[in-house]
Image (cartoon, rainbow, N blue to C red; front, side, top):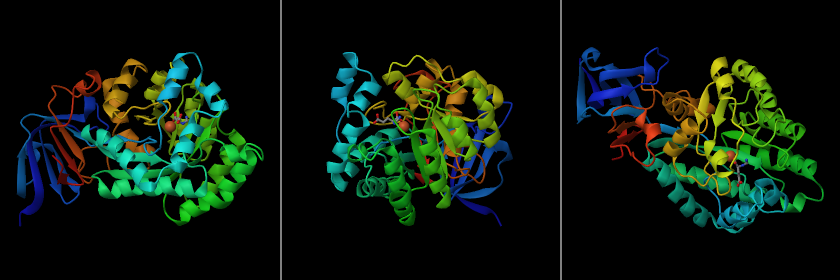
Amino acid sequence: MTQQCDWLLGNLRLATLTDSEIPYGAIEDGAVALAGDRVIYAGPATDMPDLAARRRLDGRGRWATPGLVDCHTHLVYGGSRAPEFEQRLRGASYEEIARAGGGILSTVAATRLAGEDELYTSGRQRLLRLLEEGVTTVEIKSGYGLDLESELKMLRVARRLGEDLPVTVRTTFLGAHALPAEYREPGADAYIDMLCRDMLPEVARQGLADAVDVFCEGVGFSPAQTERVFEAAAAHGLPVKGHVEQLSDLKGAVLAARHRALSVDHLEYLAAADTNVLAEAGTVAVLLPGAFYYLHETRLPPVAALRERGVPMAVATDLNPGTSPMASLLTAMNQACVLFHLTPEEALRGASVNGARALGLDDRGQLVAGQRADLALWDIDSPAELSYGLNYHRPGALFQGGVLQH
Ligand code: NIG
Ligand code: FE
């Protein structure tokens, strides 16, 4: 009997992003078949099995890519940091502002005050901007609450966004983002005690986080404090990731890799020699050129060493109110090429298959049978165009979980 499928998409060029000698794993004259929320065929049209299709779509020669994955965002937050942008342009540094109680802590104050619906509404607006560009999976971190109730509030908002919008949301508990003002006196060790004893177990108990993150930095937490959080995460069965080597080299990436981190993120100050450890641990290097751009950084992440060691590189927006108020993954891909010298193919893999791996997801990011039916169709002549023009492209059609969105 002929097998049934829900969608048959023909006349496409496929950027399958499989491990292939061919750039982008490209297949000209391609076809894709979807059944339920899965791809059941993606390959040359001529090799397609005989399928009875409920619906058909003529791709008209468009390029199909996997749905994009933004694997690092802080898109749920209250308030605005535009005044700090002005301060920085008058000469104050990000670290000076942070040490004076601004920066992350000013967003913490606004986020604590904000009601859940208010956070939902503003977060939804930012998330919609990402979806317009073909994002079908996004990570959202907490970290602007820094007390149990406010962290739970942020994570609930993130989960709700994933339930209401056509996107997979993965949540990350980032309670160790900054030291809240009320802990300045007892100090960071006391805050980490409380986080490991009270916050993390409750977040885990309520099933609100898929991973745990720490800002390991002079203005964040020390490697020893970071390690305690990683150990507590492991005790609750949660994988870890780290904001590391953004402003200095504290060897946070090596520490994270020892804890089998899903990803290490930022990495401008990562020593080239430390890329080996990431390769061995299978930890993804997440590049965040938006923060580099906004902070006028000059130190580049060791991309050549990462490439040479075969460390998977992901690219994400870091969408946040302070260092990367940028709701555009295609812009991050462009910046990764222009500022960090990634190739457009690396940028696209970074915003799809490697972004998915940074979230511990191996069921998406490539156009092959068995993967989730998340895919975008683009009116472009080559996939490099996605990283080339700024604000040139929106998908002409988008499937999320096998459902045609537009
Ligand atoms: O990823 N590095 C720390 N955290 C964020 C910035 C957060 C903020 O400034 O609000 C980042 O860049
Ligand atoms: Fe971040």
